[in-house]
Image 1 (cartoon, rainbow, N blue to C red):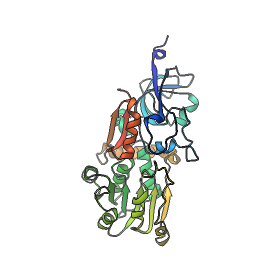
Image 2 (cartoon, one colour; image 1 turned 90 degrees about the horizontal axis):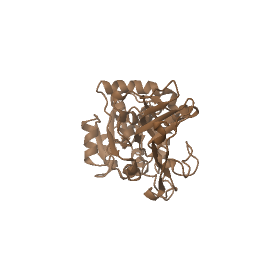
Image 3 (tube, one colour; image 1 turned 30 degrees about the horizontal axis):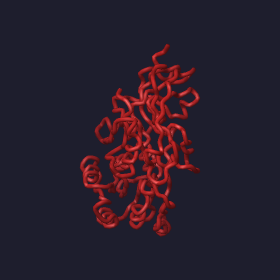
Image 4 (cartoon, one colour; image 1 turned 60 degrees about the vertical axis):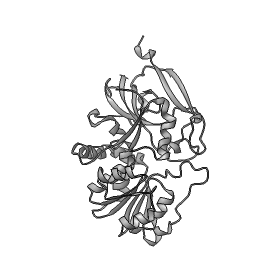
Length: 344
């Protein structure tokens, strides 16, 4: 008998669709035996999982850019892990991989689903959690959102909300490397100090301590050429009052709206787009999947050269998933939020 058949897989499944903030009651905790991979399949032991604001949208029923998680299904999540059994020549036992592993201890990936899971081998020497941050989906979102949608030019003023979060920290650092002036928006003095002193932003506005409009007027005296929006709501409205002619607004997320029990609040100042001949466009990172290797190579180079930093907020324990996820919506995470599932 294989030793794999003696392993138990602990999983977190969506038990009901949340109204407002998710609670522990929206989840069920299940166990099942670990199975051997079939022909061409791979079995991965989950080490770290990426917790992202987008997960809240995946819990809702309705049309979106990706199908919702079904009731009773293991919650969707990307992660990094280690191959512990393989019948696929592309992946050897001991390889570290990034893939859609979902919220569970072990992920069995049949051959037919390997491409769909996005699985690829990673270099652990870069730091495993960095593959869920700057070198992972948040980093790809920030890179392609800024570079393809935002089209930065040297001298542009770039404003980034959620600046201390996973996507925001990448956007700001790339913008600086491309010769832009970068102003962050974040919650709390510690986060603002960090993005300025550690990441090299030119300024950061603490939305918890003051007037965002006043901060934008002070730190963006010539206006905002590019706004990378991760929060929506009132902050989006405030930035729209300061945009320049031909400005580019990248809609990445709207975390301030995800747990609303009332309709999502749209931008009240949208006519500023008309007056300034500006453009607002959404970014969904999966559209750029074929280009990931190029962006990873560029940013891995920056990390090796010390030109970029990758900060993760790591919480231990699969059983803590429900409460850890809420850190995103309470603004408690400092850096990319990661759940450690197992030791290496």
